[in-house]
Amino acid sequence: QVQIVESGGGLVQPGGSLRLSCVASGFSFRFYAMSWYRQAPGKERELVASITSAGGSTNVADSVKGRFTISRDNAKNMVHLQMNSLKPEDTAVYFCNANRYSTGSVYWGQGTQVTVSS
Image (cartoon, rainbow, N blue to C red; front, side, top):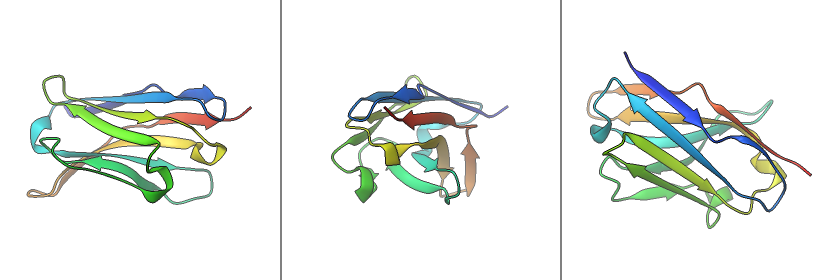
């Protein structure tokens, strides 16, 4: 049974930091590229950051460049999103995504809420 569970969300003041984590099970994690997406109320889901299956390459959206960092631990089937210098516009539900491009397999977590507010 495939499971992707996010954690680490919460309420933080502007300028603060949060570290999101995602733990996966039920599939061969090491073969999947992993990404974090977010969706704010009334907006479409957008890609925030992604990392290749072996962790050798990462990509982050321009809106979070220099503030967010994605990493993964294939031994623990985990991916993390370190978020620094948070802004109110970072408020959204953050989703963990697994994608194996060679097979078309895609899995999603249920999301974790991040609220940046004073």
